[in-house]
Structures are given as C-alpha cells and as structure tokens.
Image 1 (cartoon, one colour):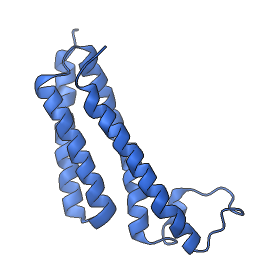
Image 2 (cartoon, rainbow, N blue to C red; image 1 turned 30 degrees about the vertical axis):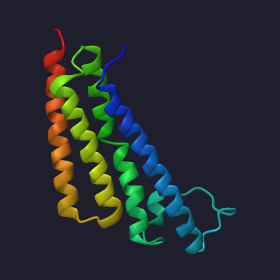
Image 3 (cartoon, rainbow, N blue to C red; image 1 turned 90 degrees about the horizontal axis):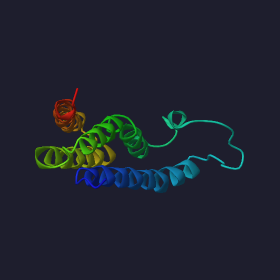
Length: 142
C-alpha cells in the first residue's frame, strides 16, 4: 500500500526519535552533574529525577513522554485512513497540520514551556486529530 498520509506519520516518528536524542544529550550530562553514578544506580525511572536535575532538562523528557501518548491515536487514525483509501486531500492536509502542531508543541515545551502557549498548541492539535478520527469513521464501510 502506498498512501501519501503515511508520510506525515513517518515524520512524526522521526521527530519522536529526535526528541529521544535531545533527551539523552541533555539528561545524561545533567545526571552526572547532579552526582549520580551510573555504575551504582539500580532501578529508578525518569520521574525520580524531578528535583534532582534542573526543570529545563526534565521538560525535554516530559515532551518525549507526551509523544508516546496522544500520537498513538494519530498513527492508528492515519492507518485507518490509508487502508480506506482516504489518505489524501483534506485528510493529508490535516495530518501534516497535526504533525507540525506536535513539533511546535515539542519546541515550546522543551525550550520555553509557557503553559498557556503549550496548551493552546496542544488543543489545536487535538482538534485536528478529532476531525481526522471523524473522517476515519466516515471513510469506513459498515
């Protein structure tokens, strides 16, 4: 199957991996600076670093976590649209809008983290996703 709507999904996957890389190159040095010795650490999770490393460092990790949440609905919706032959036109435009909004959300959260701006961008992306999901239902044959 070759559907144009899979391209924005692939870009969002790549962006998520970029955020993972950003997380690693910022968090690992911050952990060392905080005196954490990787050779003796046992267990632990990202939330354990709250208050240990600077908030700015954790913002990137928070965003990476967010990219593992709502976008999973986007990926599923895109596959449904692609399988139903509805992966072009307005749905393709909406998919690209969703991806661009999620990238903007990442940049806001990982750098400036102004909550009202982040929430506004997130809300816009969510509204786009709702329309895509409705279109996925409409494109399905019952």
